[in-house]
Image (tube, rainbow, N blue to C red; front, top):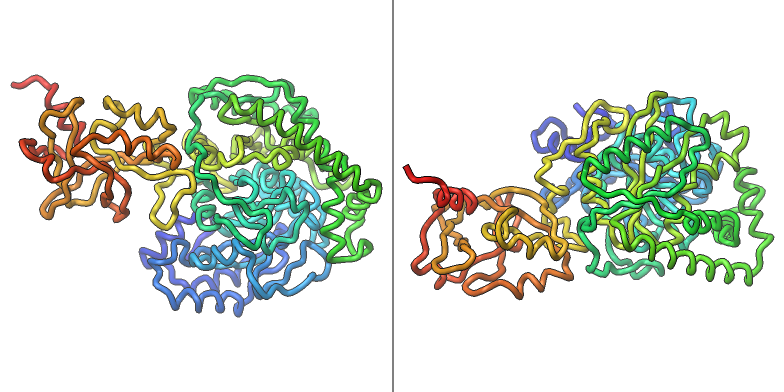
Length: 600
């Protein structure tokens, strides 16, 4: 029987063990309620059936997200569903899938509905919708955060294991913080926005909500990719780091919590955890960040929002708060727009210069949280407070990851966001894995804690989830952690991904005359599993490692215990001459330890 609060891995295990069947999704979706006003359109029997028929015609092993239900913010097109952008009447019936939706469906995922949002993604509170204010998953008197309100709440409540939002000024991060989940805000252009109704097209991204960061990364690997139909899509440069390397995190030198002592105390908890993880924390002058954040709604950038909305509806047909915001565009000229762009570029350059000295910047995702009544009484001011630490990120072309932190004494979650340079998404995800592995807070509204093998930096990538930034390299000998050549990996930004074994078809030999001592790995029927470490090496640095490999060793492919094939150190056949078979030790470290142990 399907259960709430299942992660992607839980769903996959249930299918694999036969506990559920694909058609069980029909009854599961039929039982979904809408108590939080999170949904605008829940899938019908026919809409789900059509998707299942396509999946049933394929081999489940070819579908990495086989039968995984997910939801989509209702400003992203899904074929056969209406797109409303939270207008009182649907804008149109979508006939084609957005680029990322098509990718997720092709991986076997199933759309089970469209979620509520602040109208036209204009807001950070989740109250600006004719379909009702989306209530917080912990306390219905409080805001859920927006604009991706519905998507965040149904992930927090465990209805789906992942959902898509969007993020221009914080819409994929603020709701994550208010509902104790992960919000992955990618580098602009990494995930296509074809099929998205724009808010500010220059700065929009599609975001991902999950309970755990590993699964957000897994979903991103399916969605990623250059899209020639998206004028703002960008090819990944393959030069970005895969892990933090400086051990330094910046924080704002002054922080505003608008009188919320619970949020202030929560940030102190985050600082304590960060320092316990071994990071140096440095306060930085936040003036330039604040200056850039203020331009998003207080400068001609609001003209982008007006342009997007005016293409679809009359202004009289939108909510009064939406109309009030976009009408500010009438006060700006083309000269103002160019001036705003020049100012954005100058401030962004300053911000990037500051952040280049750090692995990331940590901020409170939102400085406080308000009741729905408080927001309704003062909608503009309270909304602006939500964006205090989010508005500048896309304007400065940065990557970001919103992470859970604590459940405060008032029973409401307080989250933090880590912000890094462009294309540092994988480094953020690796850090987020470590953060959640250390965190004591349950995921979403459940009592389930993040399950993680702390020997792994991030969920191992199967061949279906190739990384844009890194190559998986299995090491078996002198490059293992603590061994003499491990520095060749770490000096190039390599990060340990997992400790595992090869398939049970290998022999291990101590090569004669090698300094430092090195093994040779040979594939052989009748062999056994050999202990290895899998490291992620930045693609741009992988060639340097290959260049250093001495004869008779080389780089080839090795099969792991789970059936994956990854790059690894292998040995030419002539290298085994005069070598010693040490296969029975099961790994190089065990063999080395045996050589240093006293003989009895």
